[in-house]
Image 1 (cartoon, rainbow, N blue to C red):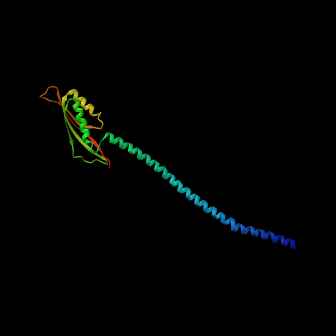
Image 2: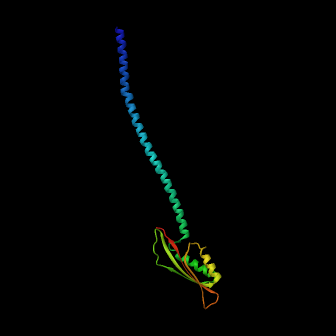
Image 3: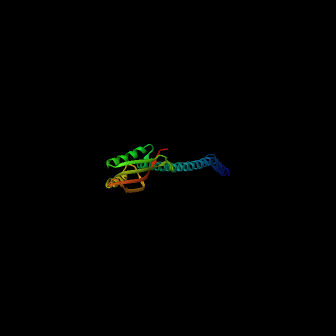
Length: 178
């Protein structure tokens, strides 16, 4: 019987050592693995947020680049700030090429429009033969800058035969950088 008691005692002792080892080694290791798993999930969420922010940053950069291209196009079509005289000189040069007498009167009371724009009103009075006047009107459309005609009147000059008077009002916009 003593050998059976001894056998049971040894087995009980071995089981107790195994239980203590499980309690001292495996349980803390499992708890540590669980906390590491939670930390990994948190880091994964943070990285996912950063990644989506990174994609948003790339989208913002793309939109900014597109806006800058549109800004360059606007500055090409509209008159730049301080370049009003250049547009008037182009119109006068065009009239001179066509042998027209021209007076260009800008409205210098520029009223700010929305954002980065101001309206530039021009009154153009020209006198010359009919074909030159028609060519002048046509060539206004081919200027470097956009010019929107709002009023146009043609009439003949009574005292000189074959002379036509053009009265034209139009506008452009001055595009300025903030």
